[in-house]
Length: 479
Ligand code: FAD
Ligand code: 2HG
Ligand code: ZN
Image (tube, rainbow, N blue to C red):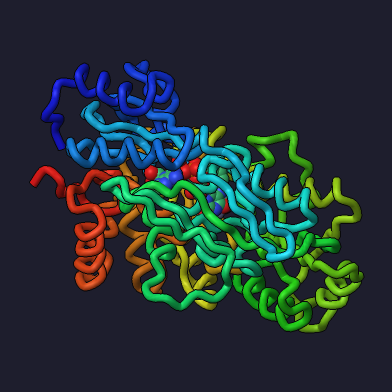
């Protein structure tokens, strides 16, 4: 997409339309908004727009639609795949929702809350808690990621096993479409069978169909009881067996089930030494599991009883139960420090994938064998939300490895892992989305029917291709 108008005239017109304080330009090359979280993409932008309300979002989109200006929505900018970074042309506008951060309403009786897109996830959790309610989405990035970004990526995280992903946590959405029209779908209704589910289409659309401005989210009763355990086990196969046993014993109370193989935990031990390590030496595999309940009930006893069942005992080498909130937090800190440990260690390759539960052990074994054989300069850091079949199948360089050799292997590693995912009928993006980093992979691997339908929907809703060009779908706006 090229600019057909003089940039300084465009900026003057934008300022006139939106007000001086909503348009920031020019942006310094090192402005944080122009670079992605993992520092793999650096963009440029005509301007950073900072709307204060839905009407301003509508004005700016109508403005861009009329002039065919590319628009990149940005939330907390924690995307792992460059989804919120503009391209290098300097012709796109970046729209940050951060000023739209009001909790519009909490309806405790209806167990729902309406928040503007720029609210951080943490702020939404806090607002729910203040009303003795619970909003279950929980991510390592929750202090900075925003509800708009969570919706646009259909975020997952640590509690999906029990409560579902963002799509399942949403009742209604308000969004502005590319031509500036406002789709007011804010509703607290649980039942509404009046045609296509447009909210579901916008959730996971990664800013390619419009700008989400607010959402009505489901709340749950405050969770009054919890029990958390760290289990030392031998293999991922044991983890999958334990998952079944636990579900049979504790039912829907099982909220999280995270798998952390030895090398992921060792990386935390060496890179984030402030984290307490319950087991020395580090066992072959760890599982962090948590039960929660809205009722006051002895979940510790329930969890212990489940872990003492003969078919569980056979798979457990050792176990630690959190005896206090501080101990619980320490266990979670170990799990949540894995991304930080990888970041401190240096460059890494990340693959957010899912496979059917029963395929997890052989998938992990085959990746591990291949890495040893074909990428010996790397260490496999494959961990994650095993209860959801979701693995973060990442690689870091071995200490002392030649970095050029490590980096040169990136596409071979990705091909191997994604080929294997496809063999197991899994997904090459479980929870982080496609953005720009997986665009070609999606085009290569999704069915032609699916891709054609996605392209038709995109063309119908965004006929001028102004929304987040080159993310999720190829940029056809210039053709
Ligand atoms: P951004 O990064 O700003 O944007 C992401 C995408 O959404 C972009 O395509 C952008 O254009 C679009 N977008 C943003 N706001 C809007 C809007 N209002 N309207 C339309 N489109 C919009 N993700 C998980 O799913 N599970 C995890 O467990 C998890 N853990 C993480 C841990 C860490 C330490 C980090 C850094 C990231 C993690 N993530 C995780 C990834 C990331 O935090 C999520 O994808 C999050 O939902 C992105 O929100 P954001 O506000 O930062 O969005
Ligand atoms: C997590 O589960 C996040 O910790 C980040 O989704 C995963 O860094 C990663 O690969
Ligand atoms: Zn994750």
